[in-house]
Amino acid sequence: MLADKYLNKTKFDSYDDFIKNYKINIPEDFNFGFDIVDVYANENPDKKALVWCNDYGEEKIFSFAEIKKYSNKIANLLVKTGIKKGDKILLILKQRYEYWLTAVALHKIGAVLIPGSVQLTKKDIIYRTNAANIKMIIATGEKYVVEQVESAMAESPTVIAKAIVKANGVPDTDNTDIKKTGWIDFAEEYGKEPDIFERTDVKAADVMLMYFTSGTTGMPKMVVHDNSYPIGHITTAKYWQQVCDNTLHFSYSDSGWAKFGWGKIYGQWISGAAILAYDWDKFAPDKLLKVIEKYKVTTFCVPPTMYRFIIKEDLSKYDFSGLKHASTAGEPLNPEVFNQFLKATGLKIYEGFGMSETSVFLGNFEWFEPKPGSTGKPSPLYDIDLINDEGKSCTDGEEGEIVIKNLDKYHPVGLMTGYYQDGEIIKDCFEGGLYRPGDVAWRDTSGYYWFVGRKDDMIKCSGYRIGPFEVESAVVEHPAVLECAITAAPDPIRGQVVKATVVLIKDAKEKGYEPSEELIKDIQNHVKTTTAPYKYPRVIEFVDELPKTLGGKIKRAEIRKESEGKFNQ
Image (cartoon, rainbow, N blue to C red; front, side):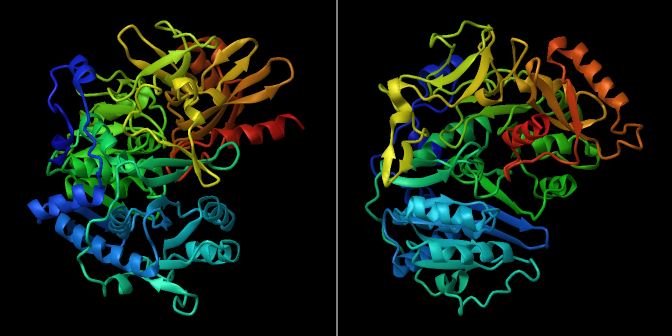
């Protein structure tokens, strides 16, 4: 595997050995397209890179030689269209296989890839095109996406071209006369291009990728990563997800989210694993599990939300003999979910933690046992600490804000270079040599970190500080509960109280559970006996589903805002 080429040492005897001796080498001219994809293609042309399928029975399997061939064709088409090094390109491609081909092409050119969700609205697209000076949009041909892009064009003056990728297998979506409306038929046009593309003068320090963060407060920020970013994900893939050469890895993520970069292309390909791309229209646990079974997935990473649905299925019906490792990230994993998945499959779930701005910086690595509910220990790439309100390092057992420190001495590969604003990369987020993600945790005496909550999500009730994760974990242990979100609700006496927004299991009525005062009291009493009594939810609301991002994260800010409107009336 090519990962070994960029490491001083690849095998470690212990976590201490990993922390002390893990070093990454970054060639000055590193380019993921040429130095990973093309090297595999030249050395082992038939090596499997991508297994793509969808809900309509379609399947395509690509070798690295084919990824090289088609990415070169796309690169030639883009250059002919007017795209050059440094230009910003917005991809709204869901999990179409063209995303992988186009991403590699953009990296080879030195153009800047900007992933976009298929849920982007006209307003979102206008904001992105103007904030980032986007020059081209390449989008799936689904009706909603085409309409949003079209409606945004009058207020997107920097866009010189737009290309359409026809929806695979989806009926009645390609209903736009693309030639009349100025769209390039992407597959038709890149198919005409030559499959040779000469190496460009792109450096590791050049901008490669920009993520728009979710923007839960205010407009989204633009996270900037350079061409060394994929190398930082060797840690993510090889040492946290534990992918292996010539195996098959599956991570769930729409291509518009940073989790895609974490789990569906960079570290996995560098480590020699192939990617399973399941291009579904709507998540259904039974369909996902059948795909995992059919393709004999070896390593598997989905967000906690999906694990909560998966464990409610009869897992004895599926053959998981190929599955060797399970992991999760995006939100904290409730211990009850960990324990139920272990009981059903024999596999422990290895939780990891990071964000759009980083690679994995806390994780459960192979040299120690994961503890249910813990997000693990620091990655060797990052100097992690917890600081209290006085700015001092926390003692074991003390809650504090997670920080990445000593950035004035060393900038970890995988950490963003800064935020993009007004045409410049702004680095004041690293003031004082610290990066502060805004998350609260505590560390036990064995060095494990335990997530408490986002700083904005902390609840202050009658003088107590309450983190949502511990209460959520207690609530989901109740047999009637599928999932829940814990947030603050305004209270005239206590300032804030704990509110639980609860989704019941799908067969709740058949099992004797219905939304009622009786069930509310039962859940409250359960929480009082599971955690400190003052943390119990004084308000419980039953809903059919929780508001979530496309990546599966619960939108707690949206729930808080709705609660403020109700309780302040």
